[in-house]
Image (cartoon, rainbow over all chains, first blue to last red; front, side, top):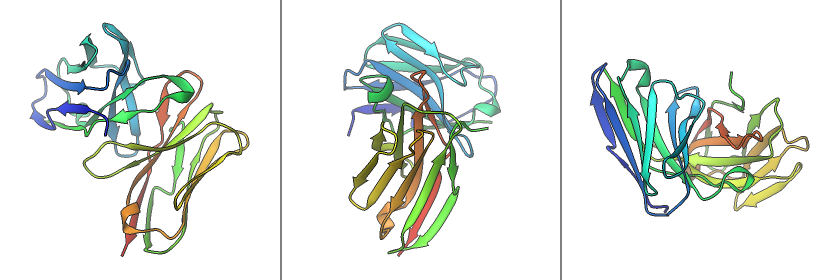
Length: 114
Length: 110
């Protein structure tokens, strides 16, 4: 199994509070991604990183920010959580992009915003 | 609307039956992938198809990429309870972002 650790695994928070989710990899892969998974929508890309301090927006980036200060760590921050951000969040890593891309996923973080 | 439409959304069958699930789009993809996801875990890559008309087999699972590279199917022969899970297709529509379908949730009853 790819060495990907997400923390926390579960979190309950209140509307308006900041939340940070952490993804840690031991594979030294260049690319890291944050997805959210919601019923009926599948997995949707929030942000991704193609190197230290290099990040870009995905399909559903509004309300989220990311940071990557080290190869192994990718943080997702909800500056002011809203109920619409209740979801399961998955971190993924890959060594390449495009046709040869193989995504390896963490076990997910269940976030509930009350 | 989803870029990739998967059908059926839910499928419940008995052990030993055969089944086919579908992944369709109006867009052309340079490659399509299939993942399986079990409860409480992240998706795990099963296969990548890159050539129109390509067929790949993984034990009892057969994956096909449409000739026009707009669709794909997954056929399972003699399904087993261990095949239970959420099957997701994902495609790279030439912008290097993998887009996922909503999935087919398969339950195989003993």
